[in-house]
Amino acid sequence: MPFGEKDGRLYRPETVDRGKKCGCHCPECKVPLIAKCSVAGRFYFAHHRGAECPGGYETALHKMAKQILLDAGRVWLPERDVLLSFPLVFGETLSETLHFDTREVHFVSAVSEKRLDNGLTPDVTALLKNDAELHIEILVTHAVEENKSLAIDNVMEIDLSWLSEETVLDPVALEAEVLKSAPRWWHRCSLIDELPKVHAVREALEARVPIEIKRLERQREREEAAKRKKERAAQQKEERRQALIRKKAEAREPFEIALRNLEQVESMGWLTLGERLAERAKPRLEEIARRLRFEPEKWPTFMDVSVQREWVFKEDRRLWQSAVFESLILDKEPGYIFSVAQALAYAEKAAGVREWALKLSQLKQAHLKQPYNQRKDYELRGVWFLTPAENNAIRSPYAVVLSYLKKLCKRGVLAEERPAKTFRVLASGPDIWTAHEKEQRQVKAKAVRAERGRATLQALLGDIFPEDEKYQKVEQEWRARREDVTQRLDYSVNDANAIAAAGHETALFCLSCKRHQLPTPINECPVCYSHRVRVVELTEDYLRTLLHRLKCMP
Image (cartoon, rainbow, N blue to C red):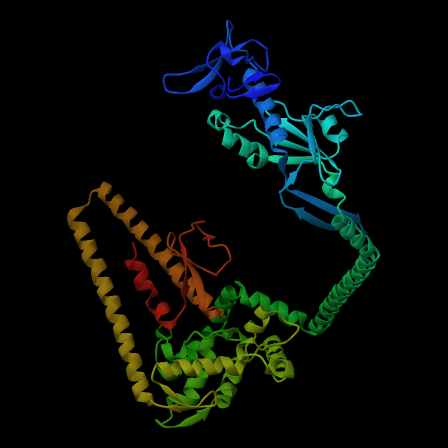
C-alpha cells in the first residue's frame, strides 16, 4: 500500500510514525495500517490483522492524485484542436482547424467530489480566474463513461493507469505526472471552443461561405464546359476518323482487284506461281540455252538472280534477265555504258509486266510527289489510303531491274556509273563465259566427288554385307532413310529460295525439322510445332551455302 489515510488526507509511510502509531487506515477497506520499513530501507504500509485488499492500491493512487491537484491549486490543460466547418455545395466543405497548445492554469478554488446539478460528480471541480468551472477526472482503472463526458462541460481526463510503482512511490515524479506530464485529453471544452479567437475565425469562415459557393459553382461550370468541349472534340475526331475510313474505302475501290492480287502474291501464292512460271518458260529457256550454247540444267547464275518482288514481271526471271544480259552486257566491250531504262525495255519485251502491278506502281509513283510525302523519309513514303504493308510491297519494274543490275555489280560484272541511272560493263563476254565454265566445272567436280563417295560406300557395304538378304534389307532401309533426309533438305532449300523470290528478306528457320517458313508473330514451326526456331536473313551467300550447311548440321 503506497499511501495511508488519516483525518481525510493521504500520507506516505516515511512521513508518519512507525507501527500502529501512524494512525492511518486503508483508503479502500478502512482497515488500520501499520507503517513499516524493510531491511533495504523501503517504507510501506501493511494491513493490520488482515489480508491486502485487492483495490487498495488503485484507490490510494486515485485519491492521492486528487489531493495533489487540490494542494497545488494548478494543472496543465491538454492541447486541443478546434475544427470549424461549414457545408458548401457539391459535397465540399469550408473548414479550418485552430490548434491550442497545452498550458498551465491556476485555480481560484477547488473541491473534490462536488455533486453537480445534473447529479453527476467529477473527481475535482476547480474555479478558474475567468469564473469558468474546470472538471477533472482521474483515470486509474475506469475511464469516464460516455454519458458523463457528454453531460458535463469543460471535462478533462488525466490517465495514470500506466504509471510504474517506482513513479508512484516518488513524490516529486508523481506530482509532475499528475500536474503536467501524464497523458490528458478533453471531452467537452467550451472553455476553449467559445474563446473570442474561435468566434472570430468562425464568423470569418461563415462570411466566406457565399463567396466559396459561387467560386465552386463557377468552377463546376468551367469543368462541365471543358468536359463538353472534350466530348465534342472526341466526337469530331471519331467523325473525322470514320470519314477518313470512308474516304480511304472510296479511294481504294478502283484498285481492289490489284490489291487482292498483291495480297495473294505476297503470301504463299508466289511459291506455286513461281513453279508455274518456270514450267511455262521451259521451251523459251531451252531456246536461249541453245542460242548461247550451254545446257539448260546448267543455267548461268548471273542470269538467274533472285530479286525482291520479281513477280511484277509476267514470266520467269530467267527470261527477262537473259534478255537484259544478252542485249546489254554479254556482247559489249568493257566500258560500255547503258541505262536502267534500256534494261527495263528489254525486260518488259521479254517477260511483260503484270497490269495490276504496273497500275499499283504508277499509283505509288504519283503519290510520292505529293506534298504530304515530302516531309517523310523515302522508306516511309507511300499512298495515303494504303496500309504500310501494301505500300512496302508495291515495287516498280524499274526498281526490280535496278536491283538485278546492282547484284551484278557485286559479282564484278557491272559498275554503277550514275546512281540508279546508268551502269558500266566491266567484264567482256569471254571472261563472263570463262567464269561460268569455271563455276560449272566446280559443280561437276563436286558431283563427281559425291558420286565417287557413293560408289565407295556401296563397295564397302558390298564387302561387309554380301549377298545375304538380311543385309540387303538393311542397306535398302539405310538408303531409304538417306533419301528421306536428302528430300527434306531439298524441301528446306526450295522453301528458302521461294520465300526470297517472293520478296521477303527474312524467314523463320526451324532447328528441329530444318524447314523454312514465312515469319509469323508466333515463334512456332507450322510443320512440326517446335518452338526451336530463329529468324534468318535470306542473303545471297546464305542461299548459296544453305544446302552444305544443312548437311553439316546435327
